[in-house]
Every structure is written in C-alpha cells, then in structure tokens.
Length: 107
Image (cartoon, rainbow, N blue to C red; front, side, top):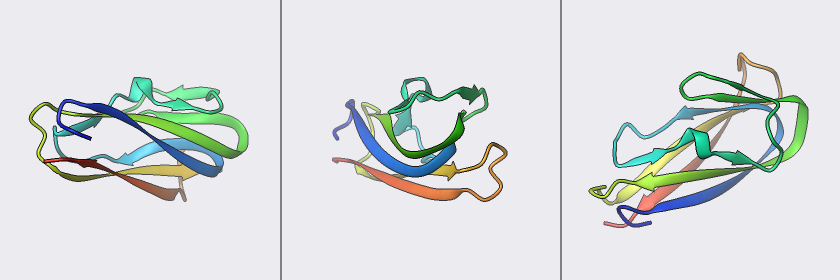
C-alpha cells in the first residue's frame, strides 16, 4: 500500500469463539479502524475495550476476518506487524493462539 491509502486484508482463523487485537504497531504510520473490522459470521457480542474483543456463542469452525488498515499520508515505508489473539473459549483469553499479519507501506 502507499501512504494515504486504506487497504483491507483478510485472515482466515479456525476454531474461534473470541478474537482480540493483541498487538498493533507502536506508530501513527498505520492504523486499524476497529469499528470497520468485519467477520464472515457476525459476532454475538463485543466487549468495549481497547482494542475490542469480539465473541461468538459457540465455537466457529472457520471465520474470515476483514481488517481495514490505513497508512497515514506521511507514513514511513516499511513492514508493520499486527497480532490477533484467537481463542476457542470465552473471554478472558487465558490461552489464546496468536495469528499475525503484516502490512507493507511502500516508501
């Protein structure tokens, strides 16, 4: 992606009952609008924390998460790493699995 652009990435996760962004870049160069994150199956609940935790009643065997990421107009080129905590349990997430994805900003 280029500075000033918004792009989406899709992540497929399996055996899911709750998801939370665990780690986002410590930078203003790239950001996620958590209100625009979408799922192939609508969550049954959202814990209004920062970042939010999305939950489903019962374990979803497979779920696609669509994440919009925006690069600031003055974003530095580079690769930015995001991490999701994914669990087949209700929160709190005691033993979550980690799913990572990278976003590359052209510089």
